[in-house]
Image (cartoon, rainbow, N blue to C red; front, side, top):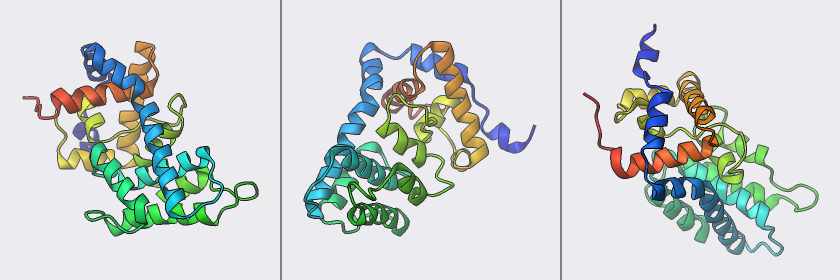
Length: 224
């Protein structure tokens, strides 16, 4: 076994255990999480339409744009701050304080594509946003698609909390770097899908529920 795999030695059993032991309130939050995020994305897209003076906005395209902007600003950012940054950006399209040039440029490219598009002839598409997010955006691309399609099958969003659930311990910097790559990300995604299959619950709900549980009650836990 290689060093890379040892660094990400977790289990679908950890995911199942944390899901099954979560409270009723947490399970409800997990069921609603991506639907709520979809609403947040729609509101951000509507604000961008207003800022950009779009005359005939369409809520589905606004949601797509909002989800893209949220995803662009999401790396190494808490969800609450992610929403704040996206809203600040949407109000004037300037770079929010504390963001990187890379994330800002991606958000700007999404909005520019939206503004240049024609609603009937050449609207911005999901593939446009995926291309802008980048080929190696193994976390942000599923995140974007899952916000748009809470009941879809576009991969599992793996961030530091999702990795912590899989490992059942707080991830190290090195472990986070491994899951940012294709092999490590796929390894963890597959465990969530296996847990989802065994639980009989959609993988987005499993991921979101365990994410809420981990963030609220387990994020400081280090296995000894």
